[in-house]
Figure 1 (cartoon, rainbow, N blue to C red):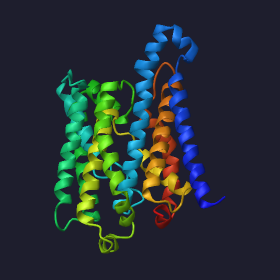
Figure 2 (figure 1 turned 120 degrees about the horizontal axis):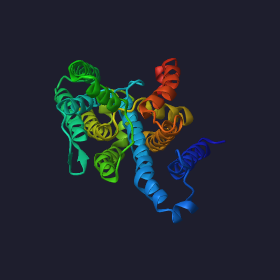
Figure 3 (figure 1 turned 180 degrees about the vertical axis):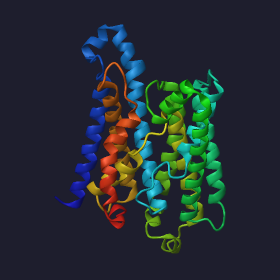
Figure 4 (figure 1 turned 30 degrees about the vertical axis):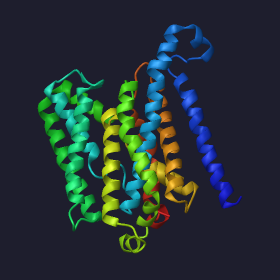
Length: 331
């Protein structure tokens, strides 16, 4: 099989699997929904259209967005272990959500809950801190990574303090939010998540050739006409905002942003980022759909937080990646 035929087979296979997951998984649950029965049963139609379908669509978009975000950060930092949460966005969002839960606020703003709004505000605050570091003239990849670690550590410490003073009920509520999940996602919340995600996809699609050059190193990329500092800041900013929107709606769902890009690289070694982004989106979205389907069907009528499922499935894969050569992972 030639290289071109292999690429076509991989992309076609991922597209078919993604489409199958989008069609089949909404029908799976405590009660299996058959299309013929749904037409004649109003209750089943409501469950399918108002509960399961937005949940599956949100999982696909969130998983795909996290996978592409992980791919972007792995390229600009030239670090195979970078993920969408490397710069502390999820920690900032978790802190914002924890503060809202501690304050006991309720209600909604423009169709989204106060907790979701607080999580997005926390994500934006952490982005602002990183953005200040990004625009420092002496900032480089290592500086930004260290800044992300510092922001994540500070936020984690504050979250632990909130756990300590919040009481059992609020601590459990915070812990459940941090585990992540797409349960309860409505069409209005999905639109809130899709707006920054669509902007992220549009901007990164135009700048994909520059992303290819980042893997050669800053000096070589600069010699080839790439404004390294400006491009890196644009990638960091738009990616962080998209990740903040996803985390605000779905919580910090882990491992997808690491596993999906590397799995696609192993399937298609040497491919450019434009095609890699498409395949990563399809694989990440499908992975989260399957994980969420398992989360709501393994122990009915209870649901396992989908973050647990992604960790259990992604953890072993992550360990395998740790034993691979760094240069091989970024080919």
